[in-house]
Image (cartoon, rainbow over all chains, first blue to last red; front, side, top):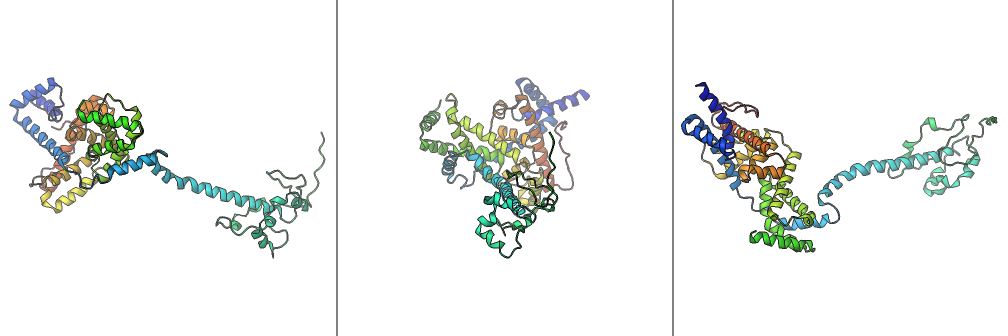
Length: 210
Length: 206
C-alpha cells in the first residue's frame, strides 16, 4: 500500500510535464502505464489537461481590430528617427536631459554670481585705488550700463550687485562676511591680480631674509 | 525553404541595398505574428505594440548581420520574445493584485465564474488574470510552451536558459497555474469550502 502511495506521488510529480508531452520517452511510458490502472492519478491528469486547455483559449482570442493600425508607418518613422541615433534611446535622452541641464544651469548662474560678487568685493572700502586702475575690465559697474545705473545713489565704494542675472536675485548671492576684506588682512585672489592688491591700511610685510 | 521565406530573403537583400520600401513590406508581412507573440506574453495591447515595433527597429539595425541560412520569421520571433521578456522583467507587477481585482469583478458578475458557461473572451480574461499572478520566469515558459507551442528545447534556445531549467520551470508553472485557477474558482463559486493551499514551487502537489 505504501509502495503504491509512493508510486502515485512520484507519478503525480511528473504529470505537469506529461500533460504537455514534455517528458522523455522512458518516464512518459512509466506514467502512461500507471494511469491505466490508477483512477486517482488519472483524474489528476485529466484536471491538468483541462487546465492546459484553458491556456489554449487565450491563444485563440483575436487581437483588437485597431491593434495594428498604422503599425508599419510607425515602425518606419521610428527607423527614420533612429538614423540620427538609436531610436530606443530617444525617450531616455528626453528623460535625462532635465536632470543634467538643471544642475548645469544652476552651477553656471552661481559662478556668474560669485564672479560678480568678487568684482563687487574689490570695490569695497579700504581697497587701494590701485586695484581699480589695475583691472578696469573687471569692473562691471562701469562696463555694464545696467549695473552702472544702479551705482547712482549708492555710497561710493560700496559693493554693488546687479539686480538679477538670469532671473536670479544676485543680491542674495553676496559673499558672506568671511570674504569681506578686513583692514588688517591681505587680500588673496585666486585669479591673476596685480601685485598692488594690498589694503591701504594694512601693515607693510616685513622683509624676509634668505 | 518555403516560398515566403525566399521572398523574405529577397526583401532583406533589397533592404541591404538601401531600399526602405522593401523593409516596409517585410514589416507589413510579419507585423501580426510579432505583435501576437508579444501580446501573448505581455497581455497588454499597447505594450505589445510597442515591443513589436521595437523588435522591427532592432531587426533593421542588425539586418547586415542576418544569417540567410535561417528563416526571417524565426529571427524576428526570437527578438520579439526576448524584448517582451525584458519588458516583463522591467515592469513586474505586484503579484496577486490583478487576480484580486479580477476576483472582485467575478464576485459581482456570476457569468464569469469558471464553472458557468462562458464565451472565449471571458475564459481568456480569467486565464490572463491567473497568468498575471505567476512569476515572470514561470509565466514566460508556460506561454511559450502552451500558447505558442514551442518545444522546451526551442524555449531554451530563445531564452538562453538550460533545457532542464525550462522543463523545471514548466513543471512549476503548470502547478501554479492550476493552483491559481482553483483559487479563482473557490472565490467565485465555492467561497465557504474547498479552500486549497498555496502550491509551493518546491513541494509535492499530492
